[in-house]
Image (cartoon, rainbow, N blue to C red; front, top):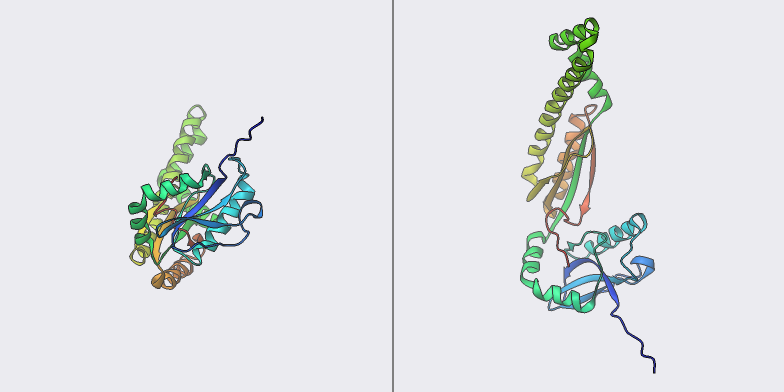
Length: 250
């Protein structure tokens, strides 16, 4: 007689919400699968069925984002990052049970709040203008003269010249970034400065904002952009799930 092994259905976890009732969000999961909830007491994991652990970052990453945003329209969410290893239903219930107190505290922390992200870049015109002014400084003129008249030392002098310009731009960029950050911090419950990802980026920050101050925060961002027109470009995103301020892993 041949026996067939029955394996638990794997579940992909998008987020944790607070709900005693079962909730469905429609067929918006991977491969058009239904997104639903798995419960422990008044907490629920938002999940969908999956076949394996292999995820297409471009395709499923967008699905993950869409599901998270859809759930956030109705609930306060503790988000899970994309691509986490799927678990079966028993594992998920065990996680909710084991971390019940911590999860309740996390939901209390972010209740009625949203995350917004702000990336600030120096414009090409601003950088070129600053470099032009630097080239007229006595220090730069001296280095340029030495480069032209001391070919044997030109390589090291060019490095020194490049570092001098880069450091000066970096200091100016940091001053601008700090001013923007300090302007916005009073309107946020919590803030986080993240890694700078490119040469012209001067600020990469996330802000946890109470929904009642979201419009005021937006107005300050718009005012900053208007006042610094021509100097900086902003990439402002949100509201988003609060990935930077609470994140759990199964």
